[in-house]
Image (cartoon, rainbow, N blue to C red; front, side, top):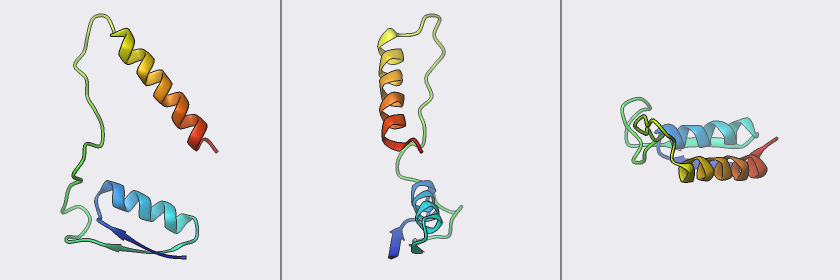
Length: 74
């Protein structure tokens, strides 16, 4: 299959890499070369240190990781 990916930020290049790895003919189209642009969304979240973890955050994180593993584990 021939696939065109719009954007050469971390998300676009990650998608293009995985598609190519899966055997698809992949083309990346971007306004600027990789490394000269940034993604429009946060690639991660940093929380300030706390003395006692908020149990809701611990629970949400565990639930999210479990769902991601179920959907995407090899």
